[in-house]
Image (cartoon, rainbow, N blue to C red):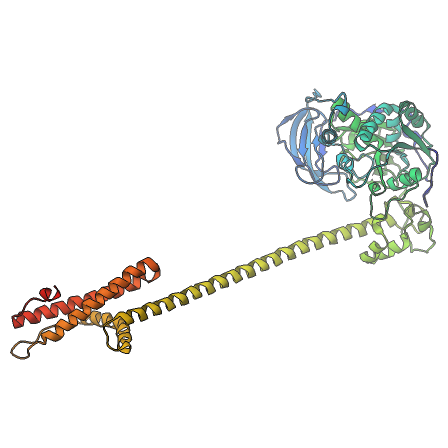
Length: 609
């Protein structure tokens, strides 16, 4: 590199790297049981696609992510799925999570592999899919899925691709040994990434305390346009944002991503995994890991199958149980103490320290802050650790967030220099977790409120629609009543009544006449003629009554026919009216016939002719 920049703060803790670099990388072998956590990366937990008793092959997919961000999990060797249960997993809290337990069969048989001799013959999306299907996630940080990271937004062109080989934290030598012994694979993986991203510049950053790795990588990049940048040794120069600052002079904005400034950074271990996935067709089933500390007799670097319990690795390194004081996963600055050695190795594991009491002594009791300001001087993110500590301790999370709490990379430099032995990073982690929890609860509350408001709106809409339908029915009934009134007036206009007032009254009385007739029938009363000796029947009046009834019957029958054509709703009413008038005609005819018999006159049927 023609120019290097520097970042603010930083410290120079004892390196303690030579203990594990004196031997080449050793194969850790196959343990008796492999414990594969389903959550080994940022994003959604993978779901097991095998069941207990299934036989699996080496490299076979045993868990898959179907929705959201994530990558699959593969079997590191052939064997039988012994259980799918909750086991302790790598986490500062010592939590348990779902794991697939595989009992190796010792045959170590591979599943069918599909290497790509010339990746340039495929589409970029096909290469990204192969990287995803290989289960590759970041192997130097939080484990972000690599295929997602290699898909920057369309409006953010990646100009600089960086491989992070700084490995600044004490004790850890996994990347150093990877570059020494697998330099060609690292460079091949970077070429694949560069072919996908098309950057203007490719750089591999390595700290100057790794001369053997620098020499191996310089030889591997000959005849390529990849640059080797040797950066000064200072912790945390291996942090993504710090290395970008050193190599490019650019700063990642607060709350932003490297892609926002046209830069992308990957770990050298990730590049080697990409190379194996493309050129050999092998999924990510193993990684390089450092086992070190004064409590082991043979510290070194191992290539370990994922899911291998830490106890197996400690045994290979010659653990002296009597000397062991603390077991740390990760480095002394950003790692955390393990409660058990049954924890399995996952994709993001890079170091296990078996420390003695003198090597990593227990921290002294916490003292009150003396406001010396050393924490602010060494902070590589130029934050205010003291104020963040006060706000986190007082549960004033909004104020802490206002001071860019989430820009803290938890490097531990502030805790390292604090003369009062305050565990500052732990307070920051606590505050971040609380804020994330509050955000999740707020999001849950907002979604519940949105569902409630949507339900209320739906109920109001349904009520309005119901009221509208009611009004439409009322209007239709009113229209029907108006039409009925008009038809009645039409009947009156055509009737035989002399007075329209009398005709309307007659129409009103029609319903009452039928009711009276039924009441008379129910009470047993019958129409009986008066004997001729007592009273002579009025035949003319009865004939006139019969003719009027027949005329009304004819009129109502016409109305019925017309109503059938115009409006079916009035059919039933008109039929009842016609039936009622028909009854009246029959009664009148019977009365006239009876009277004629008594008087010796012509039958009424002849009159109707």
